[in-house]
Image: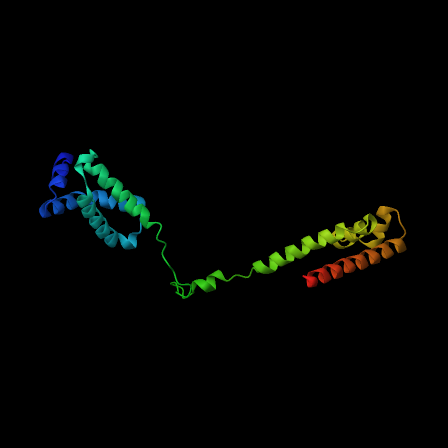
Length: 190
């Protein structure tokens, strides 16, 4: 059917005209479904809704606006099917798939996100605490615990005696304990 004839039928808009127009626009409706809301399992339902949208568009169409009828219908279908994308499908977490697994089981993983976050926060706090130590204690603590160096190697690195290295490490740990104790006391006050 030609565009001009569709335009005339749209203006008349009788019962028979509506049927002819909907049937003539079938390819446009199907094309719009494929382009803007391609859900194969809903094709029949989407086609019926598209036909209803075309009928509503016929009733709303005003020829005095000088908008071609087909352009109007095409835009209506475009916005109609595009708008359906905003309606998200709700899926139950308890619903089982083909293998018999529920989504909640698939979502649960071995990674402990909360634990990882808390570990990173504790590590950040430790970095702050270590940075508050005097330089010698800080260097020895970092080398011993983070770089896994032996005390003998650390003492040689800084040109100090082994005993001084042991004492500096012990004093650094004592200062870290004090830092954390003070921090806990401050938190308990609030």
